[in-house]
Length: 600
Image (cartoon, rainbow, N blue to C red):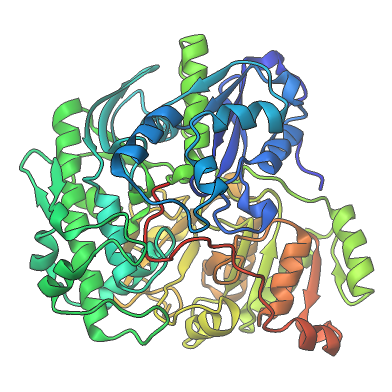
């Protein structure tokens, strides 16, 4: 693959490689002179969803994009303290992995990160260890553009911390208070996710999407599980939890409290499940609002930075933006553990130089690699013969062809430029469609994404037209909060049951060709937005290579594939391809039960 070369030497300042690994969603990020030049998830290369292994391929690609070698790196940073983490694991007395053999002991090895960084990456220089929640906090604060800010991090668990409150001023970032394991808002949400029959550490998005269909009639029961203090701290009622139970984190006592048995995975979703989802979502929102108030009192700042997996709860973020005490809120677009790679790199930069790594706000999440047109042409020539359209040197013709197909109701697989870092597709690796179709959402859920019918889709809108269609008075480039739909257009494909949408505002400066595609569609239809969802099938990582995109295209009902300058219509494919590939799925890699948070 050929990508954009950002730097060719380390003369710009210290080269810091940040790594997150050995839990889930491992990733690498590269800072050169304090500038974030590349970041990528290991799962995109290995095709193993939430791959936890040391991100060798992501590291290699980040260095390649910058025109550097491992010997050009000044420091490698790791996103958590393995010794502190092991202490917590042993204290908790968690069971071994299912094989109950060498792998279980291997995972409980505090020297593993350092050893693998040296042995697998060939690194012999300094390794900077950064606490997990400090990595989260730095990933938000140092890339927010704020000169001072309150900082709130919330996830399942790091080493011991599950929630932290901190303050950033200039180059300094300090975490001042924390809630420790086993008291965790993230684990509470995940526990209910598992109770609802969804995969923990993946299905939390489903619970959030399910919630607007229900009523909060179990809110009082959920409040039995968490005791929220006036000052914003909290503790769980631990008698209801068993975090070591592979069958689920909420046991018989919760079942008796709720009066509802756990949902069997893949079984019918009933009204009671909508109501339970609504109840845990509402409790989570109210808890986070109280936490935000505490952050404001502690810092006195008008700004808030957020990170940690719970910060990806876009409905809760909306309430903090609208009801909280802050004028400005910044959420790291890769708020989960993957983002810890850039956070630990930022901390290492500050420790080495005494300066903050970045004074500007992160404007783009397009930090992964891309593929050159000539390479794609060679691929298509080998795989598809002459059954594709070549628009090299004719972007206007490409945009006209694609916008025409979108206006005709076609679903488009869109692969262009650098890929996204973080969980959201933002116009690099996207599935696109006309948001005005009454059956578009159901069709994409059922036969393109192959997922549950209740799942909503997001709109990507030209930034200058956002306020005409959404109650949104600020930029939203990363789809990190919801807002009310207020469009004169009929937009059923991107409007959730509660009349909300998770908006991406798109500018030409940051989004280039993706912006120009939406503009071409608007010129054709007077609709300046598109349905935008990630280019993958259910249970798979977002596509990484053109081959990944081609396989996803063939195995789904996507109508048209756009690979950079090339357009491939399903109608032009040999019928044997469609017949052979349709419905095939890769094997799953899960080693543990889907309804328990894997604390190892």
